[in-house]
Length: 82
Image 1 (spheres, one colour):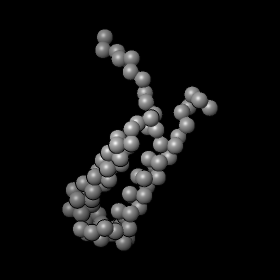
Image 2: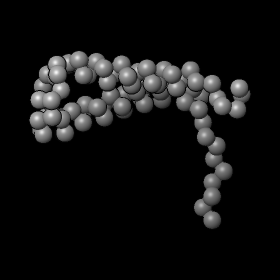
Image 3: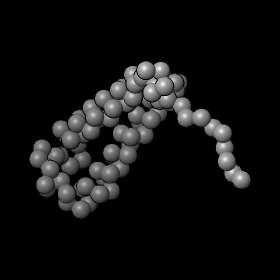
């Protein structure tokens, strides 16, 4: 009844501003997780090298992981063309 014939689109086919917006959304999600969960609950006491209210190693690692995953998704070959 509500069937849609939409096709899936590859991440690499998206325009560059959309890719940047996706990256920015994931970074903002990490920042929200830090401020709303990690810092109020004191989880940072169990995270080595974590610094409250400042840029730290954890921020760098998360941003690097997000960037690596999105770059790999951008370079991924579609499954049907192999």
